[in-house]
Length: 285
Image (cartoon, rainbow, N blue to C red; front, top):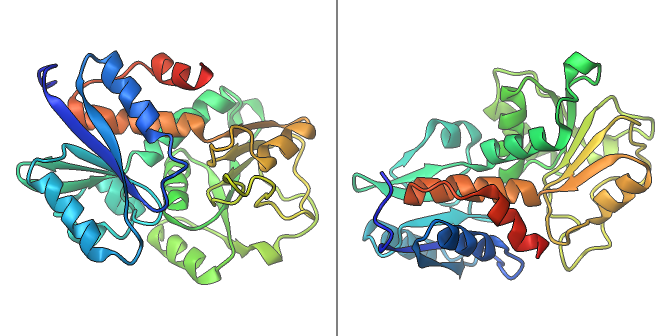
């Protein structure tokens, strides 16, 4: 049940660095649109500051904070400090949402359903039934990649994971050992057109301030019918998206995924489902 509108929701985001984050803008808009009082703070915690991470989670346990989002580099670091993981978070092996239930710290992952929801909005009905196929190339093997791979596998996609570090890619593949998950390094990608219909960048390459960078090797040609989905959302048009659109391809950044995963987390914390149009309008205006 939703809590009374007079309740002061204290929410926030753990990560490092956090200067680029748009999460406060989304959640403050969500609070306002649902008639709730509260705030959303940034908690930049250095990757080596294990005590700082532990202390912040204790504030959730003590009821000082009602919920936390988690981003790079702590999506896996928080797991040993939690009491339980939801089945989705456990399968992915990464957490992006933390909340307290029955005095237990619970780790959830709303990245996967948030990504899939926005992907379906992006590609519409252009699926296998219309001859496009469902073969994806996923760039990266970190926590965000795990969520994307989980969502795509659950939706029936065939996936090839491309990573700079083969060991990290192998660890990801072993987490989904019920599926055949080919892995490739960036250096092994062939100049010829790869057989994929969807390319998803889960790496931070191209993020502000390094807006002139693209994760895609220059010698890789994109298929004519490929959809390009870049999880990076700052800037609003990354180099990967800009280059793909210049080739006449459908391309989008991860702003829609950011909004969807935030809305799902917000509903877990507050019991209120914020209107997506309002959240999108915070960026359009």
